[in-house]
Length: 202
Image (cartoon, rainbow, N blue to C red):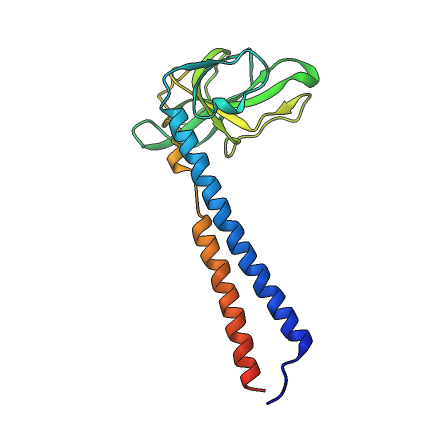
């Protein structure tokens, strides 16, 4: 029986080990994501209100009800969205600038929902709503002095005469790490089987 080629064997074993390592990493990510979602769900159940007085949004405000001021709203950007009853339509989003110059922060705020794609005019002011980690999909944050926070806020109650947007639900956060882990383990097994079959045919 011929000895397997050393170079090819080492390459395959390293590749298989790397795929298994990626699968294990995805399992760790799954556990991390489950803990994160559980924390967000617990936060969303709290009845207290977080009054935001600075130009930042603290991590503990995630999925909490917050009060914030929007002294300088941008133009209404209309993106696809759902209302509180789950009906499809249009979410109306303004980018609120808080602070001035390099210290300013820019945060998209979903001011409400409607069937109409026509933008509305909202002059700004106080906001009560749910703080959501991550940007609002489809919304452009203008490039100017300051920085864009990795957050958006969904107003409750809605503003500008609009209907209520769907309430952010942390249980809807994607957690596909288990399927990704299975894929990496399957890739590793497939690569190993193919190599063993190739060796048998030598």
